[in-house]
Image 1: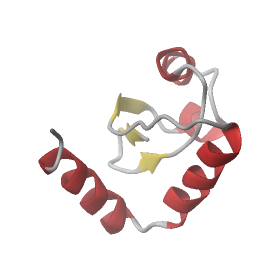
Image 2 (image 1 turned 90 degrees about the vertical axis):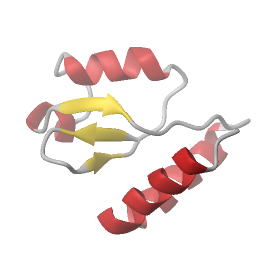
Image 3 (image 1 turned 90 degrees about the horizontal axis):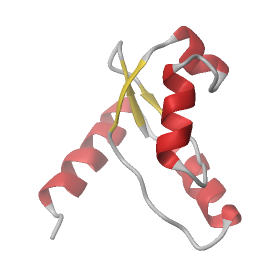
Image 4 (image 1 turned 180 degrees about the vertical axis):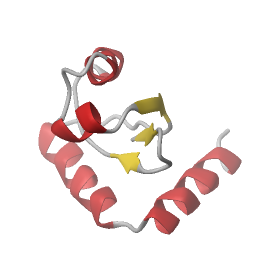
Length: 80
C-alpha cells in the first residue's frame, strides 16, 4: 500500500515491491499513480500465491480511508 501525496492510499500487488514503487515514481505504474504522486510504501505483506495476494488487494481496496489508516496504526503498534 502506498501513501499518495494527497493523503490517499493506493493498493496493488507485485512480486517486486521496490521495482514497482520505482515504476510508480517514474510515472510508469498504474494510471492512478501517474495522476497522483506516491510518497512512500506504508504497508506490504508477502503471500505464497498470486491468488492470495489478489484477494488481499481486493479486501484492502474495499476498506474506507479511515479503516486503512486504522489498519496501518494497528500494524505499526503491534509489530514484534
